Length: 305
Image 1 (tube, rainbow, N blue to C red):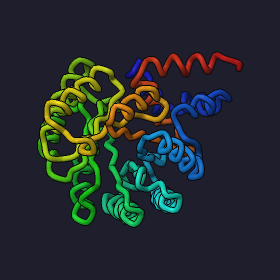
Image 2: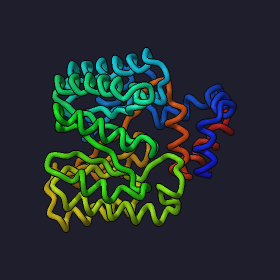
Image 3: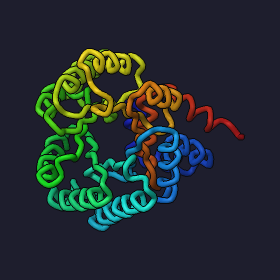
Image 4: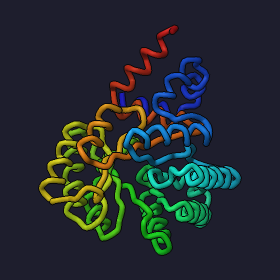
């Protein structure tokens, strides 16, 4: 099912069917804050008021035109200004896919655009995390991260436990002041570079998490898996991590009760909130990650309510 959904995310006919289905927009609202900046700010306010933190993703990837990369950069800068004006920037940051700001066109273009977003974040006294995409972009993303951290040492990195290289990457990144989000990964990858069995991905996640928790950086534990959350809580206790020296991250619309439980238990919890009109690729990856999401979507498609 996972392989099918990830493959379907690239098929134009499937995309047209899903995007045009009248029910799709209603389903998408579970996972996506809305189409515009106003929607993103409103959702952010609600989450912060409930005791959570936020990272916002302006949806769009695989940009093929410089004008689109510039538009995405402008959207992030506007979002950061609006968050600052609304007094929300202390509880919200942004997540940026380099493919959305021109990585495939020109690495220097994407670096310049990411630098502009970081400058806007610095002006708002918040931060930026560089999302990780498929394995072919990993080295280029780390190089951009390195260059951005010269001026903005707080730029966050993302690593994916399904990649065989990630434990070594965690050792390199677990340094003082380094913010590192650990997730499982949501792209279809070949066996030569990525674990294929869930058990192997989970075992890698635990090894990577141990490295990050025992390092001197700032781990960001991105998972909805109850077993991995328990592992993380145990490592927090075992390593003596203080509140505010790590955080949990979860996706908007998935396990909201668990998000609040973790926050009430004293953990910092940040919600990954996507917004924008280019929601299709994001939705398909979310469906691929969790079978329960597929069931939710199918029930909604079949329903006439």
